[in-house]
Image (cartoon, rainbow, N blue to C red; front, top):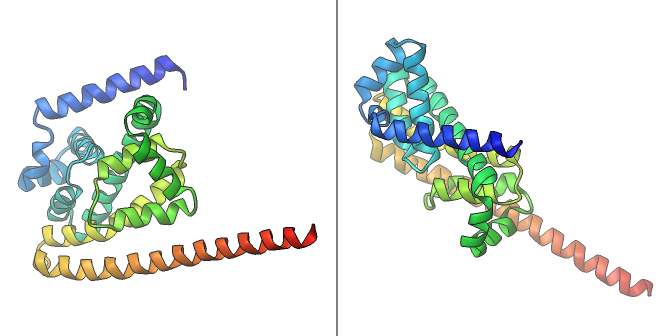
Length: 227
């Protein structure tokens, strides 16, 4: 993409973010009644405004759980989880490209060590590594998006690992927003499920790493024998 086109896109994103804050668009996400009215009873412009607000909120570090809760209240658990996860993924992809197109040089200077660590982590099995990061209860969604956009990871494994990693929490908070169960009980169940999934992924990654090390050792010994 040409430099002038990227500059125009950057200005548009910046203007949308400023407008969302100054005009109170992001506040609608925190008001479940207003959110439901605009999303369910509103016109196309209302739906677009709500979706853009959720995209900006989650893409730049806002709590995606809040969007899932409001979406569950407005649309029910299934559609609420699907809608909020889709919007959150769109926000992550948007932030990914903002970093890749506009912020990459400065982030490589300012966060060189963190970026190198992220590149080393995601060099092999990037889909599983991103999925594991998204499943972890710690870390910043914004930082992950920015590091991914500034790294060498491709979009497909980043987006695929993100959307699957987002789903468990989005489903839980959409259920709570729709009135199914208590948040504490569902979060405990979610924590157990995510622990099992993360442990399984960790085991898979460890076995792959061990197999690669074994293969490298065998190849090295074979090369020495052939000399």
